Image (cartoon, rainbow, N blue to C red):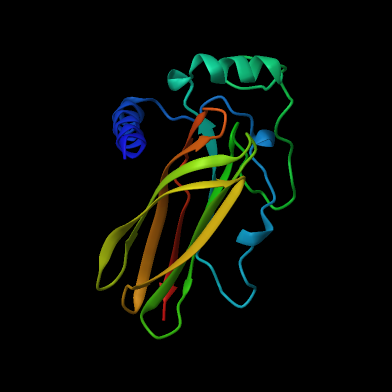
Length: 199
């Protein structure tokens, strides 16, 4: 319980710090933003209006001494340490690759008229993620809201689907939040979003 409260306190402080910060992706080269994540590939049967992915970037202000040591020992190109160019690389699908990995969100028609399926997740290039704190926001013709996805985990990737009755018409959704790697690096998700007509 103490660990849970400590993580929540850190996430609250992180949210305040990030809301006052400049865009986290400034200075990241375009060719460092592509990461193929096949689990997010949209089915061909759906016509998408918008579709985005976004990089996950390190929150260097929250680096612990252990995390800094890990970056240096493993020669990672993070937070001004390590060899430049050891991460990234362009891929043909255009998935975004930040210094921690990529995140994605896609919006589809659901199982019945007026229902939306929101598919979202992330892939870490900075090792296993042990805590995720994600928020999916959506708005449609008849409803809007948010969904919190907070949990411990131990994997480099995660994806999930949620279903919401948005009504027939245009709907939009976005993803935000933070993740914590097993070696103490916090990464923030760069708000991927999608929009489509829900029939």
